[in-house]
Image (cartoon, rainbow, N blue to C red; front, side, top):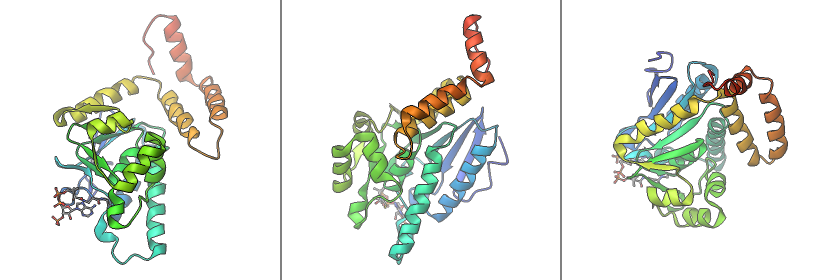
Length: 262
Ligand code: COA
């Protein structure tokens, strides 16, 4: 347990074990809704994740059995001016972009409702596992709103324009199986084994070259960055790999018919 990362937060629980930091959004009585305090604390955590070498990967999940995150905290919307609302959306987008561009794997373990900002948070993670009772949706239109934390963009990237339009225009919820069919979720598990299965997959990822894994994230994200040419980024990142001791060890280990020691 790393005390730098655990025990300091009002709305999060953080546990570091075997290099995997599990971040639990922990506002169980409010379905783990994202209020400003959650944003502030997630921001602190991601800063530490970026800096702290003891953290190799992150799992984001929700507290309690019912919700991953049931959205932005609607009680904070009352009385916001258009400018203040735009600032809130910018804040959410910046934070979620930071998660998406983190060089260490960040996986969502969706253990219940992932609605609105909760679905947007899950989509900002590098990929998602879900418990079989999880539900996904962008129900903002029910409130006369649209998604504001990157959802209109990431949902379209993940499931395509027609399905994204339908989900966001209808506000309909989909279950884990439908989310998997759409490509929103990679794997479905029972609620009991969700964290265990997520850790198992992360352990496989963590046995690979960490810098290579970070460069996979950067290269894939370049596809969605209008300021970058993804193919050029791939060439650049591929070249960079050849300057790393990690690549030398990987190639040498293969030639010596042994496991690499990254
Ligand atoms: N913001 C603030 N509070 C929320 C919330 C949100 N997004 N989602 C749930 N809560 C609160 C409820 O107000 C309730 O608080 P209370 O006990 O003080 O009244 C508590 O969490 C439990 O929610 P409840 O609605 O009673 O649970 P349920 O099991 O009947 O329904 C949901 C669960 C997730 C279907 C329902 O809470 C819901 O539709 N939430 C809003 C989802 C949404 O629109 N998200 C997008 C926001 S932009």
